[in-house]
Length: 169
View 1 (cartoon, rainbow, N blue to C red):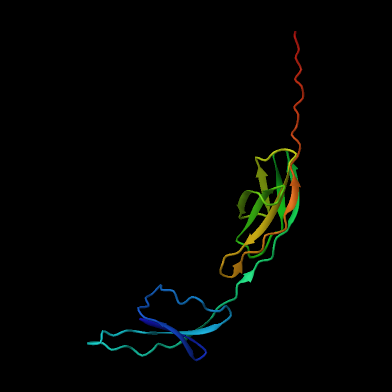
View 2: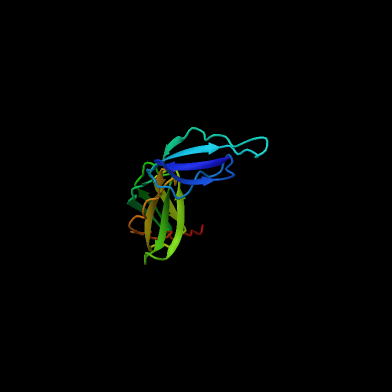
């Protein structure tokens, strides 16, 4: 087959040797309406080329950038923290990043799929970190959000165990 692509009545390109499953085209504009048709190739001996099929119209959708989630709250623990971030409709997941207190040294990147909270563990007690969230889109309808502002969080204090009592009887 040969695939032909039009925008309005202008021929944009043709692709010889087009087969089922081939890419329709790249470099098209979101929101643009295009018309596509096919021509079957003959062998030039027993078969001649077909007429062009009926043109089929398609409008490319515009990708929407997801809103940036905010870090709403956090709950410190001696070796970590739980952070709560804004749930974003349309996001396939949320990426939560934990940074050192300088806000540039990345400690971990974590994908969260089914909730709006994240539990960071294995961190030092009484230490300040920065945390951010980014809504991740599907790449078709929704594009990733920007990374949120980095919020300072501080882990809790390590607990001192009570002195054991020794009794001689």
